[in-house]
Image (cartoon, rainbow, N blue to C red):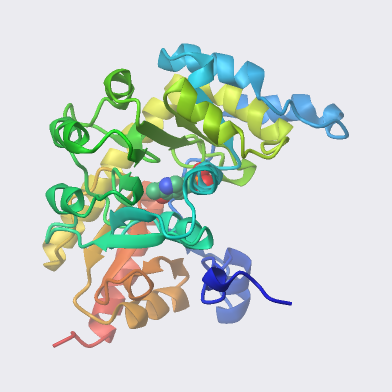
Length: 367
Ligand SMILES: *Cc1c(COP(=O)(O)O)cnc(C)c1O
């Protein structure tokens, strides 16, 4: 048997350690996972109720076109239903875009330290990934990315806020970038964390869509909506582009539970507002402590923070793990002295900070 030559080097995705395994391994009764940017406040009770309503239908295929959900979301966003495509998480929309637009030898441009699925899926298609270093403050270097766009470029990926740095590009920066991108290049603007934004300079992606036919916005119900396990996310774009992506979509790619829960969750704005407010409080709580401890961090606009612990990330990660706190060590993300921590509830943040202080005393500073 001979696998595609362009996939033989790909690692199998290594998920963060499950809570149960960490409890067993270290003999702990309480473990807090701040590693996957999940919503510490759960999900809307309306979503749970909607799932219960679907229990009697699980022997039936879902609506492949997710029509009710598409119509509701289109109305909420002020776009046409044919501008939306759903995926099993926005991960799958990324996969479908790569599948629909990239062939061997194409080029695709992305930041050097960003969401790994762009590169992963592009490589499966045999495309050449051009990775442009982030700026010193952890942001996409848009002028440098523009310079790397050429005739062979098919897709440029912009993650805003960027995972894992949490940094944001403004509306003006994105618009000026889009003005200069040649129209044959698709721009994927990943807005997985857009609902957390508290500023008035965050891009109005929906407005930009009216001018730029080559723009696709990626969003998800996994983060602020708290529906990560149900695997539902979406892309918004020009009807022609959405049609193209739909051509490679599997017939029943989203589940009944995902569709029903997402539909109900859109209607619970109070839950979203509450999560946004508590996340901002959590950021203030964490950054105040980092300031006190003399630790620098990237300015975040998401539900996670990347902080420089000034020590080998792997050691800090492991020492936190022993204390029942799971974070993402920067050693796995290209940041050898940083960790990425999801903003938890106030109580979880307190426990993380207490453990971090102990760990900083225990692990030697990196010279
Ligand atoms: C979490 C995340 C996603 C995808 O999440 P899904 O669960 O697949 O919807 C996409 N992009 C970024 C930047 C993310 O952090």
